[in-house]
Length: 202
Length: 90
Image 1 (cartoon, one colour):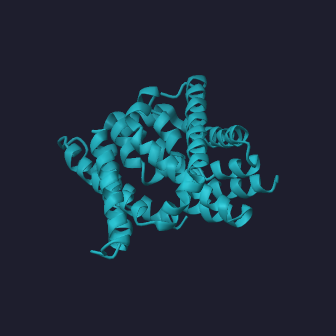
Image 2: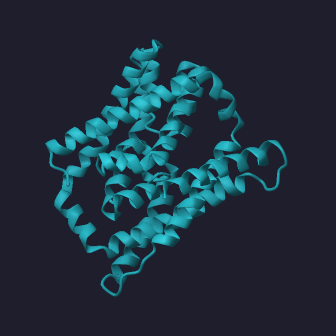
């Protein structure tokens, strides 16, 4: 199944590149905006439907209860630690790499925000690193799920609310819908605050 | 956070619909859903491929970005694994 996903991704990337740089067949916005959002909204509807029809999923969420609240906070802490360690490994500005990792995968936020604070080069890094987080989550999901069904949610970070949610639910089961959405939502809300807070340490 | 309402509406609508339909009969949406997932992934790839700013910054920041992305994922995954055991998440 994962190979279809990788093929679709590569095919899309090549098509997008050719359409933008070689011969423009359609206005790119139709695909990268409208088609993307339409398929996402349809999937969200179907996932909600499947979740509510599955009595076991609802029972599982009830049993887990408020403990799901800790998931995004743990993911946030793990991400920030990862950013800190990568700064040490790469021997570059540790505060900046930590701020980059506090985008939690939300690259359209992390890119411009980190760029504004630390300069354009860091903005490019913030954008790319967070975009890679989304990409790696999708591409490695079949391996990731073997580490436990919370692993893909942690890997997806803020994106587990939207772009990676369908893939996560597909591989981890409908009972992970609420956890994944909740985690992605909280991380999206706190991302701008944590980036600015970390930057203020510089 | 403009996106949030846009995401919640179809999700909740689907849940309400599913709640009403519950117990009637099981429908297998697996194949259809996977097709739509592929459309989503394709359009995601498309938006990457047509983003020249992203592509041109790759050679310069690529390696650092890979390291940050991998370690960020690694630490999140390891930490959630540990906490999951500690608080006994199902």
